[in-house]
Length: 400
Image 1 (cartoon, rainbow, N blue to C red):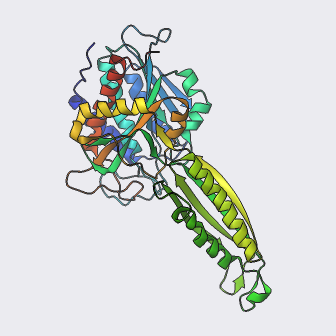
Image 2: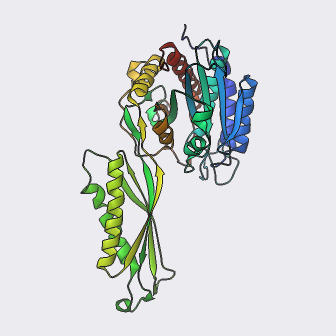
Image 3: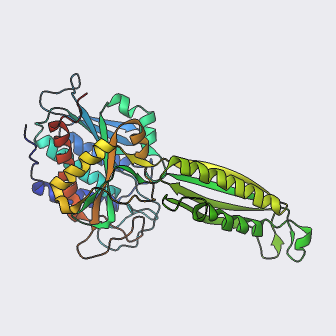
């Protein structure tokens, strides 16, 4: 069986146009109606059966290799891309900038979607592999847990697969390079809220009140010790307070102050210690000053933990596509979070990075208002997905 990848060059113009159209028309989590319709139409034009509406706007298409069918799918692999945009006001002025106030593709999901469509194009041109590929276009990655929603609606039961893979553009890597690692590659992300209850009064008479604002500030300072003094320096954890609320005007002590934050770790047990520490510190610091504190934990995404076999395989395919010197198989994990972690809790697989920085230029950070996906890597991403799927079957990776 051959694993030769078809030439992506004839399709690049079409893919670039598709990606820029998505960029100009971004849609937020679970609002990806136009995006899903365009994706489904593209896949149907390739002759693939398409299932729409999983997790509201999700799309799944299936390609059977030669001799395979729905009744006899053989080994199956899933390739996943995310589709949603962010509530960010774009400041770019190029022709395909967002046409919608207050939202943009600031994380490259338009590129992820297009690369996977390119892979579907290549695989459909030459389906000489022994198995089935499921193309998963997921909604709601940006805070909507769309991966979990698709799973709850039967993604892996309706479309059984032995492994699932995902790819994210990475501005810290130059275009032409790729990266993956065994084990945690993205952090878990939980949000929390601390509400400090005091007793309001006049700003000129603080002794007659219980001022929650300095108590909240004291809690902020003490929470930092959970990372700097209670976490192993060789472990990784981040705790950030991103928002503080309290009061109405300068001369009134409020009844309540609130803190809003996020904590991120690469190990579940570290997360458990942080959560317990937040509750302990907030409660006792408040009590020490005569106030009370209520802690609300808002569970988010789990760690994205790559399975060893699948991550090594992904790294080998990266080396085939970009060369061993350009394929980094032990990248440092990032403290950003990704809901693909939910999928990896249920099905073996791996999550990798594809370099997005233009030649000789520093990459623009993800979620930045002047971010744009690098169209020069669309062909590389499509080629990589095509090669990974073919090699998965050629090597018998899905065999029982």
